[in-house]
Image (tube, rainbow, N blue to C red):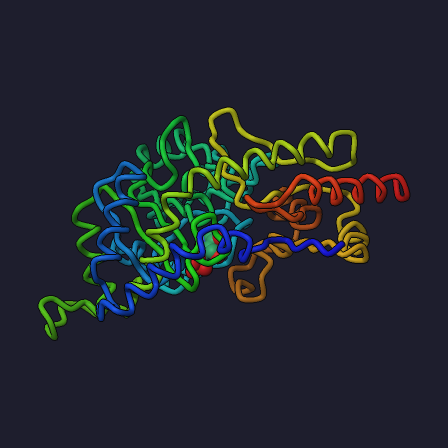
Length: 369
Ligand SMILES: Cc1ncc(COP(=O)(O)O)c(C=O)c1O
């Protein structure tokens, strides 16, 4: 049996007519950039998150970049974030000439450990980027309290976490701003790139709207150097169809996670931890295994795809050699990088497939442990 890590077509099949109609209507409208579909999505995502402003941009990476830039982060500044994330969480800091400073993660949630942030703060620190990794929010009360005491900006990297909640508050709505990605594999994914910033800060929202169109206001009058970073109408039309299904899909992910949790009981896997404060949306189903690489090979031999998120923590990436970190600096992130894997998981996965994967893991344990 062949089992994919993720099956985007399975979801498309369930909403095919609606999606096709939305795409064709947009093409026929003749409106392709920053038109009514983007406006509607911005309003609906702002309402969904309970914030005043949402600004569509070209990707989650640009959402982070434009937000950091709007807050004036640049040369000489430091921004504290996690080493256990997708590269863009730190890359965007570096792209503006600022320095990412890492703090280790919590061994259970894989999010930045809020208790390790304060020791990293210097007079150069301007912001914290907590990353709600794999769809589980960071401990935001602690992070916001530290930020308040040290007068720091908090930009939530909620690229993997749209719809997740911390004590009833939506991811992205708690910091000064929150950033989402609509990369196709995300829980709310387009059929191409896309991103969005949400914020209650009207001034910052206005600045991001300016930055996404070359700093232009009015037409062909450029107030600042900006970017071409617009969410296009076709992606917005697709996302407008999908947004109304998001909660249902997220709930299905949570149900499927419960099924795996049950099926994997008694194996040598550490299944995902859900913090008491969290509504977890399981962007990925991440397990830990001491024989991770052998398990991956065994599953592959039996037709089951897996993924590693992430094999090299950011402080050990070649691109960050110049930051001067070394192996051993963030032991928990390094431990996770060597032992975690994602197994096949998406809202439409059926129980039979989950049983097949879990049975293989049990067989592997019997042979190897
Ligand atoms: C945690 C995190 N941050 C940032 C990004 C960047 O988003 P995008 O791929 O839309 O640029 C991603 C997505 O890949 C992500 O997972």
